[in-house]
Image 1 (cartoon, rainbow, N blue to C red):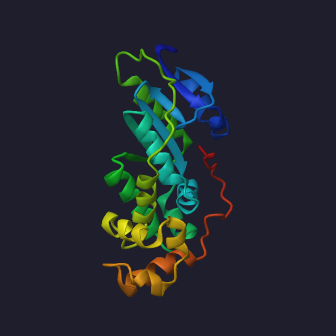
Image 2: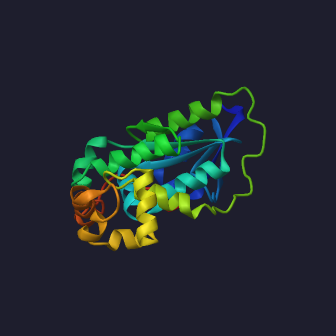
Length: 228
């Protein structure tokens, strides 16, 4: 049975996940569009970014994750991240699970974006339906002009703060010393150790994480997200 006042706007690259069809079967009106931010707009003020475990890790290493978080926050009042899949996969994807949990902590604490886990696409669809159905009225403009992200320094600090043992104050000192995150990543252990408050042990941990061979490119049966 259709729910005439309920609708979800879905990014067209989410078709392959099968979730749009699952939502339709439940009775929600679906609009497929090309979204510049997020994957599912469930109300005028609420947007959802869906990430598989695999893509979550991939987006940490290629630098997409915190930029996406900034854009979600800049354009919607209530951004949400759905983390889909089995968290046990982390052990197979990376040798350092603290990278995963560090990124999650940054998203929840610094960006104040809630992360909701789901085991599979079917449960993700049900959660999205629950989100769009929770309000009596869904009137309003779902699609809006997307702001261009300009807070580069905030993005840089967020990326550096995801490194093991690095908080915002240390991230600021890193930028003061090296100038850019890329220069930080390229720095030697000896140079990193010279950052006030960092020390040689944490510098070694950072380089070990950056140089560690990641398994995030391992083939998975689970569909991963597109770039936003």
